Image 1 (cartoon, rainbow, N blue to C red):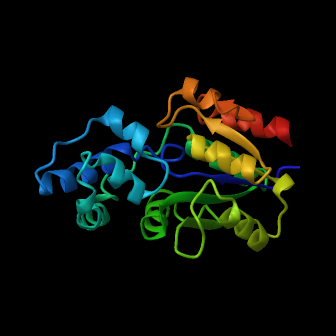
Image 2 (cartoon, helix red, strand yellow; image 1 turned 120 degrees about the horizontal axis):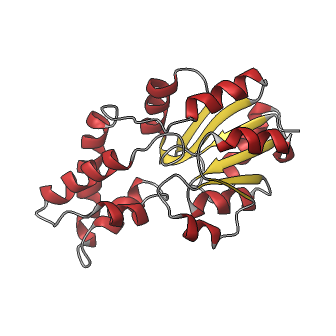
Amino acid sequence: MVKAVIFDLDGTLIDTIEGLVDATNFALEKFSFPKRSLEEYRTFVGNGVGRLVKRALPEGKEEYFEAALKVFEENYFETMLNKLPVYDGIYEVLDYLEKEGIRKAVHTNKLDKFAKPMVQKAFGDRFEIVLGETEEFPRKPDPTALFDMLKKMGLSKDECIFVGDSSVDIETAKNAQMRGISATWGFVKKEDLLKQNPDMTADKPIDLIDIIALER
């Protein structure tokens, strides 16, 4: 029985890549470093903004990390709500889950201070719990934060499905021994996701309705 679906955020619910690219390139330019391309950023995301900035810095410029991260965070906090393109079909999926009485939550490696206002602006109060990166829990793919969410919701791992677009999300579901759906519409190429042997894949958000219905 599926009683809840827990979603990743970036690349799963919202196509946030342009905002991340803009803020990171803004930080790189601040220190006269060359900007990175969109395709490069697609390989940088998924492990939190710290890893994103580290990967974007030129080789041998690691000493600029803390300063570049500060510039990134200041710029992203000011601009992140300007562009929030929700993927086509996501609202329909959320409507279906609400109709079926299936609970919804978000678990992301985006910093919690960014994740909560972003979800609130795009979706209002449609998610029961929104949890981003905090000092309290290790980042995904460690399942500790996911287990805490399940405890707060009063659910078991067998009653939930985790949906995400990256290899990190696949690993998270496997580490939690939870059913996972790999969202191939996101930031990572489908062929790369398939190498991680996801439990299930969905090529479009709307496909989640049929998959979840079968899993019930």
